[in-house]
Image (cartoon, rainbow, N blue to C red; front, top):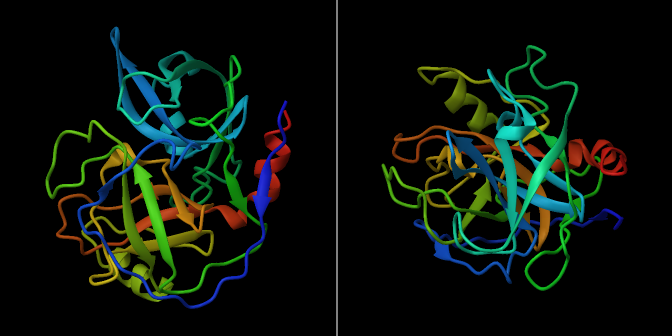
Length: 257
């Protein structure tokens, strides 16, 4: 079994430019990104995103692998393809390890999961392990980060993108993020284990739930796992990701199981 790799990186204040509607991307540019598919009757649809940790393990959001009626047979992983729901390698889910703090009364805190696959992924040009942030590293404000996934890139879009895309964002001051979500119609809790990001010119970005579990990259290193946000809100609210640096030790230990 391949080992998990992570990076301890020094973070400095950097400038950021934004592509507000996202840019087309190729899986060769982001080979650690995979699709999480859900089954409805006999039809499999991409509903979340994940990242390759080892040939047998995927990193994603806990909310993608929980809820009423959930079982491992209703999820599978598609890796090695830029196209939503087509091509690549498909592997079934064997077991899901959800962080023990998730669902324990502190909003979406701990929204992170390590998924054990029923078979192995063949690593290569289009399937590669993710580098993850070192334990305890916190991200500075206004750091340029990249979200990669298949959710819609258009305001009010109802259909996910057929092809992979990347979106340039910047991290948002925790106080601003907290203020926005505390004053929302449906308030949310923001904790130190989360990282908020939005368009550099606005500070927010509407979220498509099909990007749940998607990696947030800084310089090729996975620093966040998309957790929640607001849709159809004119980019008022930042996208909130689970901060990988809060859980690196748990991720590494769990991916050895």
